[in-house]
Image 1 (tube, rainbow, N blue to C red):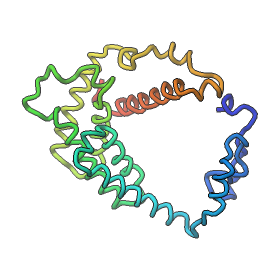
Image 2: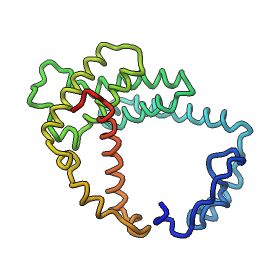
Image 3: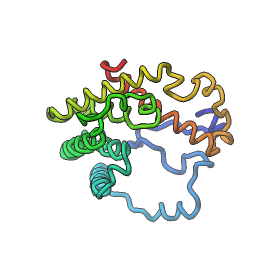
Image 4: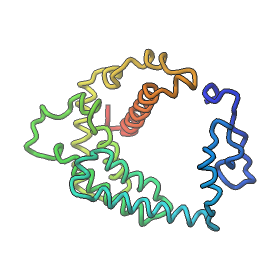
Length: 231
């Protein structure tokens, strides 16, 4: 971060301010909003109770998310992104028990819909457990969120079965990949050696897409590593 910001370093946070971000005037000049946006921000009133306002905003956003994903065919269209978005509601709802409970229930339904091919008794075993399911598919998300739901939600025998099938498929896929290089689709040391070292290079869409893709892969890998039943 230091190399990307150059000489414009973020001022140290003053705990006495009682907020987790500095005021806009304290931001580096290159981070400042446009003049038009500054005028809009100046006219925005701040709620007297920020915690209550933040909770109301979170509840509203979650409600809109549920309505959107609940549309016909949306889970099939969004795939793993639908499950991830709802489970994020469970993560963020730790101080809103009703939201967390609802998100876990919704997440269970979406998980079972997406995991249906792994639960099909007629599924040809040769069609599951391929390396491509981890490289390009949603298997990593499914097995990670299935474990989370099992740990956080009330017992559900179908979730238990889904998790078992997903773990078996993941272990087969890991064996099929053989190496970390094959799983990732690149050689880590070579890729890391080509990362941008300047703000100008980092700002290109090519660099942004590459780094963002690596971040998403890292999230999936951490989820796999958190499951002791995976090889």
